Length: 502
Image (cartoon, rainbow, N blue to C red; front, side, top):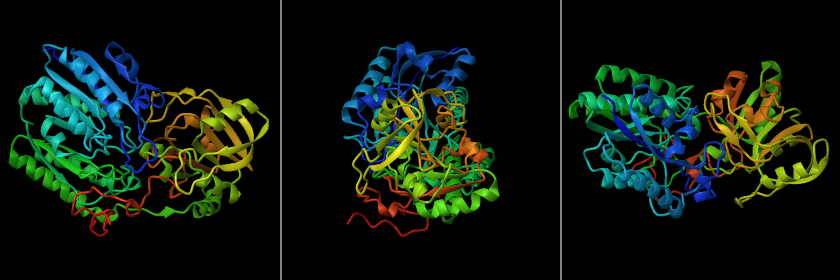
């Protein structure tokens, strides 16, 4: 039977401690992902890209169903979404949805960790308004990012929440396909209507949730086994810890044929997560320690040491404009090391004015007024220039058509720095190759990313290390001034219970 399915989505991962808000232009300007798209322009805009909505759309059309595109929009992680941006985009989606007749289902590609100027639970409120348009009877299925902060309202108002299972998120399109499969099973059998969910009582640092290594690798493997044993559909969201909201943190979700089955499955999954609590940690290097360690280790490895400049990760709300690790590489004498992406449109523009092969005095970074940050004043050689237009080839950003504005490759005392004009995390080797840099040929590769870079860089790495250079996304949550978390949660795995704001 052919179905008529409305599809749309809205993505934002909100770090409430980050320096910059997401206004409407953050959604309407293309960068790492397409700009806001609406109606008939939606499907061509997302075609061929590793996105949940792409996976769902491809699966639905292959099965012969009819799609009614609404609105899809994404902005790079940052501080809260402005009220204007949220209300404008949600208003467009609801307006288009209200015009549709004869729908059999609605699919929404959501993130799950969106906070706005006026709402703690952006997705929960969106689902509430959607229900006001379509009523209680229409099946509503949503896919969520692995870093969703799942709320009671989200669980209540959606018939199914299907969460990514990989970090780096190489399974985004696959999650869309799983959401389509969930919808099909829901419509055919009606045996997934009973829900259960459980919040986990500790925050997981972003760097500790990588599913390529333990303990997350084992947790998600065990989740798949529990699905087979229980007959339930399961999801586990690691949460997005730098969001100061009541429902921040990990959660387990189950859908099953009975309340007893769903409750038993979600309790088993939650128990697996809590048993692994002590293992959700890793060694973190200070910048100077990281450089000294890499200079000692890299020659013997014969392959790059890859450094994650995690605390200024644009994928977690940073603006990509801090230079702490870059300065440590220069001071430490890390010749032929590469560093990127430094998001600095003014310096990229100066490099284009200077021209390839010439030198200029630059004031790099520190554009967003973060405490303790000053521009890095240095003379640099402009090695290469680019227009920031290229297509990614790595498993995470696969197919993404980047538009990063003017880019430049600078050389500073033998260290190479890649500059871009639009914010994106450095999670694909094409971000370096577009300026003639082959990462595998360099002894040290420093990237502004937390985990997503591993999908494309870990295969070339001799070793991966995490560096805590200055930035708005501290690895240690005890450094963040939370005020709104729920009672009883632990800020770090194995740490003390949060006692509330001072």
